Image (cartoon, rainbow, N blue to C red):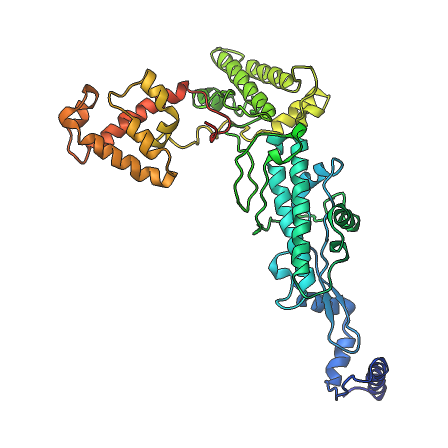
Length: 468
């Protein structure tokens, strides 16, 4: 049952707590407190590390850091604190690089981080951080296409959006409103920025943390930015993912090496060249410049791959020449692209090499086989250079406006319709018409796909596939 001294100590402790409670508020209810004195004394004698571990077992470790332990006053149960790095600082030219580079090494707060009940304000703060980090990641994902200025514009708008969304939710709940939410406009934003615990967006997590998707709708297009930094126009759409121009090419191209020279030459005909006259709107300068550089690099590769000796050396020289030209615009000024800021040539080439999305030139060979879907992009060339002997207008007009899933059924119906015209078939279809009704559609499909393959080898693609 414990020693008399221990009993006296514990009795004194209970009396002090009850006395303190009565002094702080007369209305505090007094009630008998019972506990097992032997168990209490055994736990008091445990090493400090054991007590600490038991406390940590109560809390859920999260990507935002481990909850901390603090006893509650007035004799209540111990309380766990759940730190949240809120708010995030305002994106600026000084921190935008860190925002993008360290994005996976700043905390996130999954639902499991907090208990099911309570901690409402901290949960709202954590949700705001998760949402903003997700949007910042989306902005940074288009940095190679947009350039640093438009990426900063996107990040700044995402930050303002997240701050205002937080304040709207905070005001709708019967709770003490955040002090920074009381002002409006720039005063509110300045208040939040000044309160940011990590305004420089430095990495605080040793291991990468996963993104927590946003459920909010953030509507951004580069045309929302000041005109002098506008980038490619993207049709506005309501979505919970940032709308960004998805370029249909791999830039920068991988640096030729002993590991990739075989696939580089073997699959060259499968890699497309690009037209830039489809980029009609202002702001596509960087994308157009990238597409032209790819065309020149591929032209150089074509010449080198015909050689019997020194293919690798030739291809690498062409690659270095064209990427050096890429870094200078028509006025001889540096292009706003991260690898171009390095004045040391070797470092610049290393940057381009590391940045390539297809360093081994194997994405093209792994691409989907050509199908009837490609007729929507190639029908004009087929009609002009590789006619199939029957009109393709019905395929294009009826099927191409549909979604990819709906096109499958539409193409099948059109093939059946053509196969039923064998009584008046052109010469190109006579072979197919000699087959059974079940085999005819597949035979006609092969004729069209063969024409698509020929047309695709000559067609230059638009870097943005959805621009007509």
